[in-house]
Amino acid sequence: MDKFRKWLRDYLEFTEQEVRGSFLLLLTVIFFMLVPIVYRYSLSPAPIEEVSIDIPLDIERKIAIQEKQSENNYYPKEKNQKSHKKRKRTQSNNERFPQYVERKPAQVIIREPFIYLNSADTSDLKKIKGIGNVFAQRIVKYRNRVWGFVSTAQLKEVYGLPPETIEALKKQIVKEVLVPNQYIKINQLTFKELLSHGYLDYSSVKKIANYRDKHEFNNLQDVYKSGVDSLTIQKIELYLKF
Image 1 (cartoon, rainbow, N blue to C red):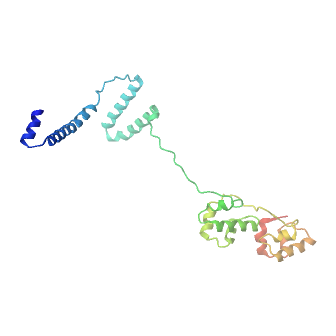
Image 2: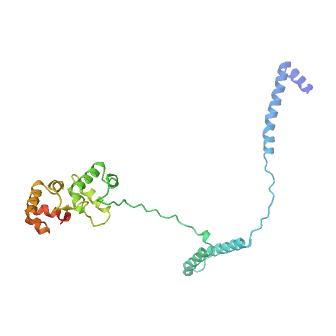
Image 3: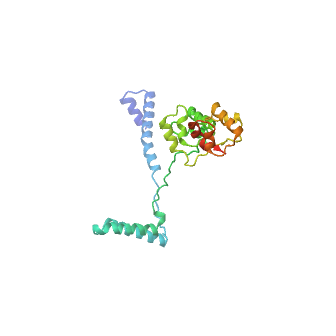
């Protein structure tokens, strides 16, 4: 080492300080060259030991059966017998090994909301396509005026309700016989109560009251006799209760 340092000093005309620096640089280079080699050998994987596993007899049989089936699938017989045997083999495998049968996820069917026309509130009605807050409030308000719907045709009487929205609403109404939420008990209700119904104006209620002062309403013919116009009677016919 002293000879090497002397050679550097004499041949290359290095000073003592330059010789020491060169020597330190050389050691550094050698160190960094050896680091990857040492690191690679230190991370070499340990030898893998062979381990023997005893497979239960029933699993060995299943493996043998599956291997045999794979061979049969790889070497099919005549074309006219292939589809029949394939169906038979699939059915047999499904019965013998149900745990290997591929199961498809259940199909989720999302149904449109169905509503009861005479009991649905605005939040229920707004679930129908085309019905927002304004239309929902109008439907409920009109239903209260006429004491409940007795026919889906009455939806046409709701102000501003488009025909396509009415059709969409009809498709999502529970199929039922519509009955009013309140009947027109023509022999019992007061003048003011009769006037609160949306189909009865002051003139019609006055005629009903005048007739009732002298007679009792027993049937629809008596209503016609009271002088109420026929169009109004047709509208209130399903609401009447004698």
